[in-house]
Length: 130
Image 1 (cartoon, rainbow, N blue to C red):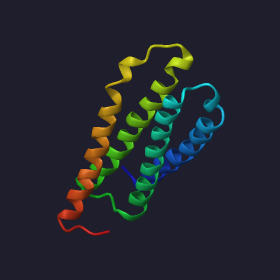
Image 2: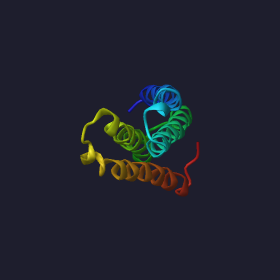
Image 3: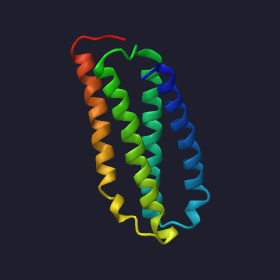
Image 4: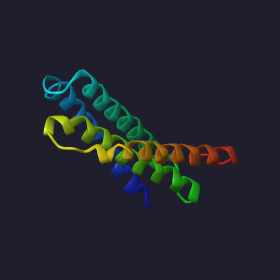
């Protein structure tokens, strides 16, 4: 994994979260229930948080240790699974498709996010610095 890949992922996640946030608050607010909009917004919020985290990690960490790489991959994969599944589940009723099989994907994405943050915590707890 290179710093450039991390920065590209971070920028893509940031861009997509702004676009999806605008879509959610404008176009989807008329067609989805308040509960589905709220879920959709959670996905957008977590995606932006992790876009910013990945941007910082890509800019500041050398990405030379397995803990650094685990932190980045955990956040990148976790964001895709967590936010992506929330988006799809929020829209399933509107699309009239059964996507309930994606239900377990959301917590799996959360586990990847936790693993990413845990790896970062361990990286710093071991005395590593930026």
